Image 1 (cartoon, helix red, strand yellow):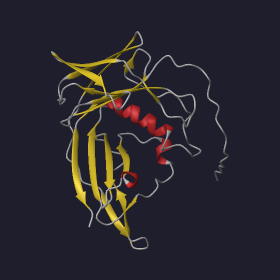
Image 2 (image 1 turned 90 degrees about the vertical axis):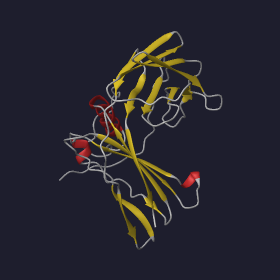
Image 3 (image 1 turned 135 degrees about the horizontal axis):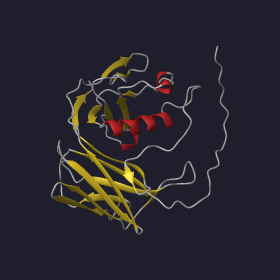
Image 4 (image 1 turned 30 degrees about the horizontal axis):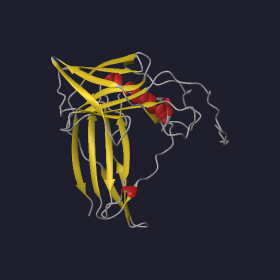
Length: 253
């Protein structure tokens, strides 16, 4: 028999100045101006991340170079100066120059396979629907990330739901004994956008580590907290990924 208990505590983080930045470079093959977000780490758990401005960013792909410029209204958000769509079979190189330091990363894109859309069912007690299945958590043939965005019949940003699910080709102990996720409820007439992203083996390793630090915590089998892996050289945190996307829209009755 295994027992566990919980006790609320305030975790004290070291009060030191971070010399490096967080690079959130999530590029997809959607037709849009690609976005990269730069921020500074925080020493307090509940503080918002401070945006990083005045950085020079570019992505190289073959003989092409795509430059990024910071948004005037969204500090720390950099958008590509032109629309570009990544393709399979090309290596992509990220270069970030900030505060006299250079950061670099390299990755590629895998194709994404078609997928079965999520399942949902009515909860008669609430007269609302809830998600019952999105994807198998274990898939030996393909690793993938799923994004689910639910918009109510009367659009309201404060009521929108956004959740992520993952399929990995391994099963971690902390994952197998993780607590059940909270049920996601939504009303009649809602619209669901489900997206499936292809992920490379190294990006899957990063996402598994992220899940171990967040959604798989809270049991006696939780892993010891540690820094997340990264493919970015130069000392920055974060990850540079390029993902193919397949999506479906579902209208809830």
